Length: 302
Image (cartoon, rainbow, N blue to C red; front, side, top):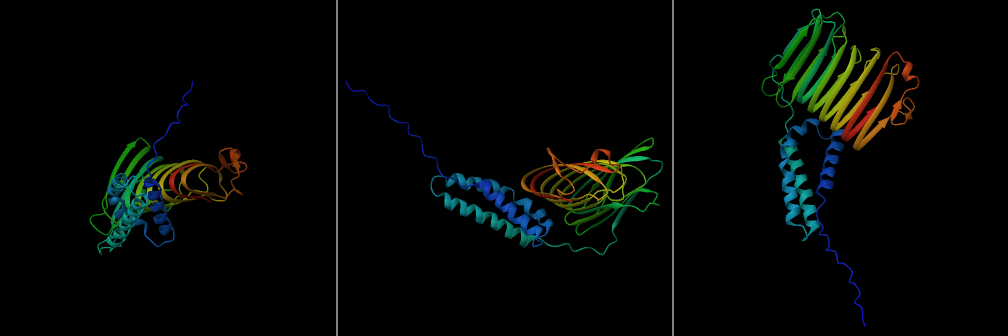
């Protein structure tokens, strides 16, 4: 009597397909590298983002060529992304600034003894610094725009001695914004910026809290040297971020960086658990608690 042996299960072969996600990350990495080396301008993203439908085309190519020739699909998608970059560089035009006087805006300080300021600017460069100590204004804004108007939309609410101001930059492509803030009262600041180059010199402000959300940007932040206790949270996507902490300021730093590089001075901020913490942080007069969440990019804390 013979017993039939069970036949081993045959699994269907997986059809090779083009690694679209890997190709996309490769493309982002090349662009960011060239921008970090100053070969490509950061404002090029103002043109590149319009090519987002290419991702759908790439997925369609991968499906059509699946099982036939994965290498052909990979090469085709690489060529597609390369063509997009070439067209974007060809279409990009540096700013040709008009001869008109820049648009200005100012808001008087009045009797405020604290304020919350929200900045919402896109597609250009944003510089934030402090007003002279003798200034009677809460904020002053100057804008220059290569194409279109450079108006600033402001929404201010006063409640007794507290104020809440939101500034929205309504410039178009290649705008420059210079925002100067009072150093005479405590300030809570929120920043929302995309497709931008940001230089945030907050060193002379009486800053109590900073929250920033930046997308596709090159950003430098200088924190105050004598503002007491500060909390800062920075969310960055596809960005090159540099945060400078003065030598006389203690810090507690936590960073979550995905698909990127994180650099921190571990001599100043040794790692303790999940935080990079200055010695004597808990008793320091001037200190900052910094949290960074970055997806795709480079983060430096100095």
